[in-house]
Amino acid sequence: MLDKKTRLIARAAATTRVPTPARLVESDRRQKREYRIVAVSLYKPESDWIDYLTQMLQRVGIPKANRSLVVREAILRLQEELKEKSPEEIRNNFIECQAKRNLSRSDVL
Image (cartoon, rainbow, N blue to C red):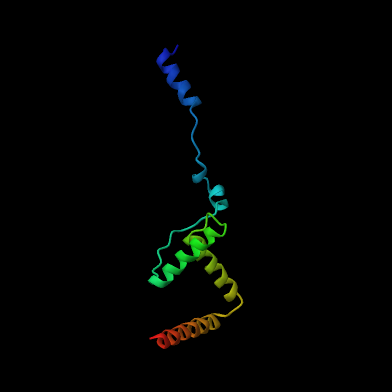
């Protein structure tokens, strides 16, 4: 016959639950909306404009508006605009936009 200590250890081992955190289960990981934190360099006027837009959205009734919301919306709009274009068309679009911006900056100076 087993002594009391051995029986208690055996029972504890048999009834111990193994935790399975949801974050470690593969199927749950695929269902979660994943995100990454990305550092982006902006010039002061661009950063100021994003802050202005964020404050304006908060004032007009979107209390959870933040910089991420503004940048994500800009990305979604850019995706929408470029989704049907070929890589060459996208390249040309960026070149044209940068050229227009550079011309408008030189007019101001």
